[in-house]
Image 1: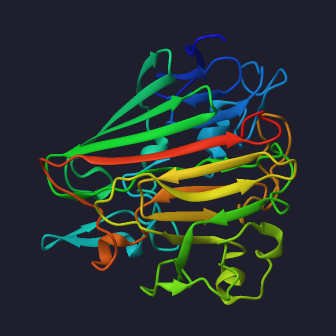
Image 2: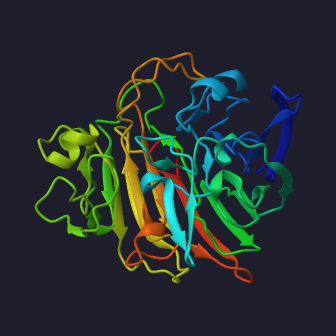
Length: 365
């Protein structure tokens, strides 16, 4: 078996002249991942003897775009690291320690994924690491005080580590010099059959007994609604296509799933990895997600419309992928009853999520 390796090549140049790199992680003879320094994007993840991108016999299970210009102009967060606050903050406004803060709205009057210039649009610093156990890449970013209206200068790191068993781990850390709010996640769009088709024939399990219903702007109402007897009951493997077209008002308004599930045994301070979801494709390939986070936002690509063409040259249709975003609850800064997203000086945010590929096509069980 080959040892894990990390290699780099240029991917493009930003308008200010900064070079964006593509880092390729290979873990032995099968698993591979590709990460861009722009947005910390997970550009590829799969198994097989693939060449860079999605060539060879390897096949990526994440949606991606063919060049940097496409990411700059038309990416709906494909594979990006999002922050300073993942998901939505109502009206872009929150009060922390008696002071009101305003984030520029960029989604129906709300702040989504940190505002219009979030971490997904930043150039991250990269430091590779490879050993006998994993191929790893550490990304770092400094977000200054007042960045997109958020208080405090925040230092963030996100480490991708790929193991030979097909597990890709994302570990986030953050510190601040002033009280602030932080929620970080990865916005990968998964299609286990390979990009180009839909995920309606995929089966999804979510380890949660309740979810957060939302209003007409996708802001949680505050209710923690049991999933039992509703289309949100994914406690057993369920075909996605059997649910997203349901007449349920929550699904009808969103055009599918775009909701946060409350994971079992999740809490503010529990750093134990717990099962979050299991996604299984038509050929038996599966993706297991485990996390330390209390919530899982499931988004079924409701606004993909076939205009974006991917690395493979194919159009990405509606429901062409599903996102499994591990995170704090949306609008937690305005909901003291939700798990806290507050980070204070002297504290270190720690968050970890694992994505493990297994099943027929991978040869792993």
